[in-house]
Amino acid sequence: MQTRREATIIGAPLDLGAGRRGVDMGPSAIRYAGLDDRIGGLGYAYEDRGNVGTAVAEAIDAGDEHARFLPQIKETCRHIADVVADAARKGATPIVLGGDHSVGLGTLGGLQQVHGPGGVIWLDAHGDLNSPETSPSGNVHGMVLAAGLGLAGERFRGEGWDLPALVPSRVALVGVRSLDDGERKLLQELDARVFTMSDVDRLGVERAIRESLTHVAGPGFVHISLDMDVLDPDVAPGVGTPVRGGLSYREAHLAMELISESGLATSLDVVEVNPILDRENDTAKLAVELVASALGARIL
Ligand SMILES: [Mn+2]
Image (tube, rainbow, N blue to C red; front, side, top):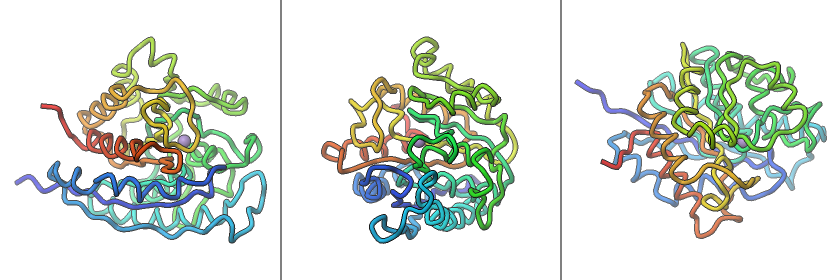
């Protein structure tokens, strides 16, 4: 008998890792866009675990300007990690709704706790590969992937998770089009598979995703971290840090469909939805559709 598949939703209204406020409303916007019905309609048992607690920027001190609000971000990530680990142990698919991309440290931490280090496909306009030493802004959401790899320093180690949470050779970046100097340098040393937007233009999204899946597959987990800014701002205007020239509506759907077909993905983050900058919640609606495609929604 086929057991019913299960999706566990975790809201993470965190904006301390981003320079711009608004992404704290992301989980609300995505739920409002009908996530429960859409996932339930695919035959999943749907469990919403509510939101994890977050600190408020105005009420606390940013601390070290090279890694602003890091202690508070780690505190939120500890709660995310707990719920993600709980879901992963049950065999459910954890889906974390951001919030800025620093919530990804919590997801990776929870997965690492259960499975040991795994692989990730990072769909993003940016590399998120800075460290406090290289970051021009000091915003932690630009350091998360480096942190997961254990390359942003010991300070990113959390209560309950070890670093690296990722196997260094099991990382793929897709849709990148804005990198800082320090990130470019790091990528030259990393065994990561990188498909810039220019590569996606030339090779097509199908090849980019298939090769990424092959690169990140392996024991433990395969996590999909979807930063909505990987999409072109024409179709996803409501994101924290928009960059022109991103994935089209169909390219993003195809990426998620291929990921679903592979059967490899164990978990998903959907981050950086910013309702303040959005048009009539379009970006949150698109986020819901992309989650559905990742979970197996088909046209026919
Ligand atoms: Mn990102």
